[in-house]
Image 1 (cartoon, one colour):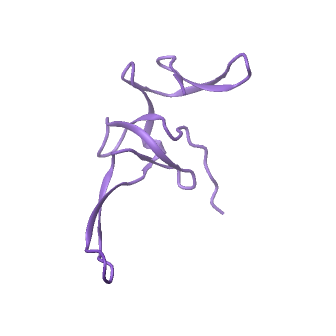
Image 2 (tube, one colour):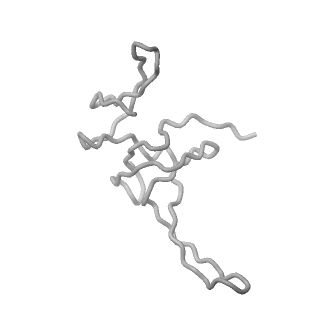
Image 3 (tube, one colour):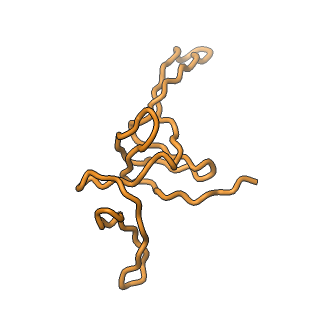
Length: 109
């Protein structure tokens, strides 16, 4: 049985890649894969896939797609202050939980 691990980022978060070929680039998470702890970031880590033609209709294609990146290789990113940071969770007066960046005290939506 595969255990789902808790991931520190969510869909729609601004993140910066901290290791690998795309180190330093920023983007928005479009999908989170909890089973493998991977994330897919819009227009980053693009791969090329060659697709064979179907029997009659289509011809062969070359498709570009975003490949997954392990969640340990990304950190939350503040667009205002242009810095990456860890986060903490706090509660507001209505007892709703929200996330706040440690370095900049910016609230994450």
